[in-house]
Image (tube, rainbow, N blue to C red; front, side, top):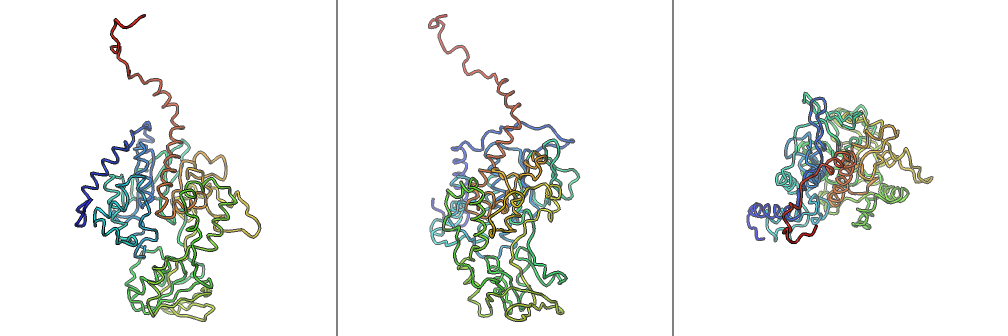
Length: 480
């Protein structure tokens, strides 16, 4: 394919995509029997909450596999879903440009195919990493070309399992709730919790600090002394954004004596790990994730250089922030390297898995079984963070702490970052989301088939379309 101008190759690519889908006989024929209305409301087979890359990938996979009564909800305006043009302050994705992403095994649906169609093959060859905005443009195209049923500006306020195997989903400003047989939570890195802000900020004016996942304008930091707590990827991205916006200085506060330099998961990353981690023994899962937490993924080299090239940036190692005191419109930080004054503080301190903190999950937070409820690690290998992770079934559905709640809870699926402990690094980024989506859809399809088995058996007995019409053999050749 030869594409010269931006976007000039998209019509050809979309023609090719239609051919590939037809060649693969996709979408599959709709096969889920319709469900009678509930309290006067239509019943969806699946509601996906979240239209970021994971939510759209799940929605596409469901529809391609013949589960057609699907709707995807997102609280953001169209084109603003996910972090890519809101709070992701890196210039490029952290994964290789060759990562397959949400293509679901369809070559014309890959980022590479889209990028070459827009910019040409030579531009792809020159590309080192995927720019964030290009990735968002690709996801917008993905949604459009697959005609995904996404509803924007739809903030989910409650997800409530009902006794009749249905799930009620309430949306802000909607008069009537939505009803579904299955609900997929694809709400991003903090789907089951919230950004973690240390308790030392209690009583501090919220206007003087932010979490790295908050949406704020970095240009507002021009001329300010900025502190960044953390030494990971998001810490570097936020420090760089502040410096590039004209911050007077940036101090990075890192509790470790040095930045991590080795991504241990990168050393064992493979299709085998993506497919097989879910079936590893519990002690193997615990060991991998415990060491992964203790020796976290280092920030990318290019992100780190983006910060260190500024002479007004300081990396403070072995320097946790022990106390914060507000003095007027400034913050006085107590650290092992003395008291340091900043005008604004950014916490790149990750996220806490805490479903009880999410109002929309209030009805299920107390029912969920967590790893700490059933697994006891060896002495010295304890990890509060891993203990707080949800214990998920092989299809991403929740296990209930009380077996009496299992049926209701098993119709809700955690397709978010918090699934990593149970399923491996499938829902933590771009590389393995194909495997994640197909695993999810196989699980949902199986559960719907089992639940509808009597209808399918009835349809089997009732099917009466003849293959032979009685005229295939001349009467003279038939001996009775």
